[in-house]
Length: 400
Ligand SMILES: C[S@@+](CC[C@H](N)C(=O)[O-])C[C@H]1O[C@@H](n2cnc3c(N)ncnc32)[C@H](O)[C@@H]1O
Image (cartoon, rainbow, N blue to C red; front, side):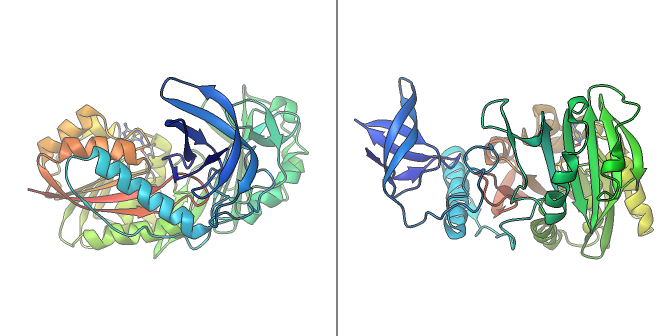
């Protein structure tokens, strides 16, 4: 029997046996549990619960029947206040432990919706549509995912009518009342019998070897944020929680004064650059050519003359641009910025940098490289992904 006293960065409960740390998923500080040891290493033990003796007052009954098996949510057993506290402390602990400078961390910005917020999901496919069990390829068939929006959930029973033996994965994306279904296969297939899902989809694609072929309906989804509309291709990145995305972009816009040259690196469909374009000159750089095609169309929709886009590697392209940025906004994938990108940002040495990150560990690594020349003024966490361990962060840096 052990008492859980804290949480690690992955949301696992931490207790001790004879002074040795034990990680127990799906437990909370205040839980007292009997455990079964799964893996014992020199410095720590991994275990699972076999019996709850006392339950933490922060514990709720997860509303999802797949929680703990499907491998998606990590912390659906915490009430929302505890989830928020966990994420706030996670960012604070990582920053205090790994960042060389002392930095102000603002209160985390909450999500209005804790369930049904996701506008994109990829289902694994075997005999049924579902998710892989945590750390395995065993498929858990599901009839709904509580994180996903209603329209995606309603599609699942129709997706199960497809010939799943020839399908690898199915991705559903939703925006402004429209549903896009992307069927991934190993090779080009002449007839996917999509008539079974035509009634529920506004757009159907087949994807094989990274190629996207429109089989039915609209080429794009359209998302609306503030006064802007964004076309989104099947493989273009867009934030999964629109409500928190709007809060994030609004905060970014508060930092960007007018009359500036703004360089938007890792710009995707141009969403951030367009959001902050008013009164500024913006250049966006992005590696995915379909996302750049979307960005150019998004610029056209509002007839924006003050914004341009370049397709290429952000880190390398900024060496060859005729653009002297006052502000650089970076929003890289989870692995953060590489060495060359940081070196090239430092060559441009803008007055301000805004760093959007979905991984606090790579964020602090990169901030330590920038902090010789920049004061890290503040970090604002955003709860973009309720019920999971993940947290988005916006950092504001000002040249020394
Ligand atoms: C987290 S997304 C951010 C997109 C956009 N800023 C937004 O808010 O929708 C990261 C983007 O970086 C792009 N990307 C990945 N590696 C890149 C690279 N080396 N150079 C430029 N873009 C890259 C991805 O295609 C993706 O669109």
